[in-house]
Length: 484
Image (cartoon, rainbow, N blue to C red; front, top):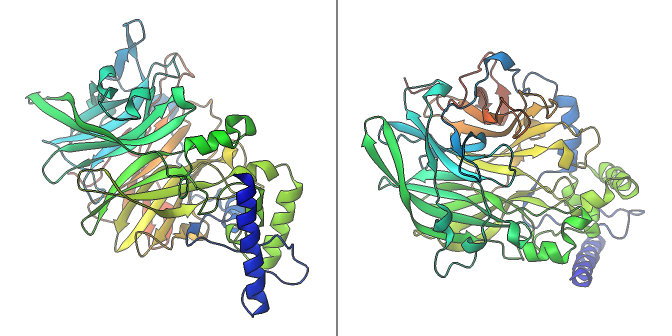
């Protein structure tokens, strides 16, 4: 596999050099490394030129996640479940996503707003399941959230003829949409600890009932099935990850966080992944691809030299994060594997919580990432980011918001009770502000303070510029500001 990859990139470099002779690319000026090449693979990129500028931006109030008053933060009172012994316990609740309409706005289901969230036993990191929380649409207090419990029973995953579900050991993040016929359709990540961290994009219809005026009930699931676990060419599979050496090499594998959208009558999932062998794979050759650097040629040569001679060389060579996209059939099975919307080759292997919506005729694409996963000078271990990009069309080209892609920055110690992550932009039915949700307090860190819905806040979107709205902190878990 590795010999084929070297041969492929050598061919690309030779072709690019030939183009130069004919008056083409200017990247390969005399004196440049003969291994250099410039191949975008027809994909937008989170470039090193973008990222090295972020440390100079991130302390501006335009990007700062607001400071929160620790004394006002509450656990989700209804977040209770069972431990392995069957005892009732208080749960940690972290990544969450609302039931949305096809346009990304928050759906109202029989007068309720619904949030799906990952929750589990604070003392058992392997206990990770999707729960359903709900509240009346007009309520704002965190105390108004009720818990309908786990979406799936342990036995649900034994679906005849599905090759993946039976190996599921955890349920990871996703999205949910209210269909035209009023059904709740959930998308999430099937994680298998039995298969070296294999991740599969998965869906089910969640059946609901309303026993009384104040209660929603999960009545089981149907049409429960796997959708996509990588194809190898466009998106890395777990087997490729294993063949490359897996976690022992410092590598990472992602294929998760499916986010559902519709455009012109077509159904899509946008998700976190890693690139495959035909759209810019990992490996040392990637460090010579100018497309991943951006900027001018002197920047490319200087930044490349730093990488090749520095401590981040191996980490950067393994970095091939992607926000991927697939098209679905009307029955939510795989229709078409498409090129990624954007990739982060050489920058980071992990761009999480894919989120996209259309506003004022433009597509806005967001992702969360951690400085600890990055290879950029000036970005530190505790830095946490939400990055954003904008395009005139769904499939790009995507350009960075605020010139670099920076939308939000937070650098609290992970032990801080007001630490937040998994920031998620929720579009509103009117106006130019989006509501930012997240979770607060890392799971299992405190006996009494559990991971919980963080206070929401507003970010304003103005074309290709965003800014945190001053004094806009909302209630914990608040989804909308235009519901009254």
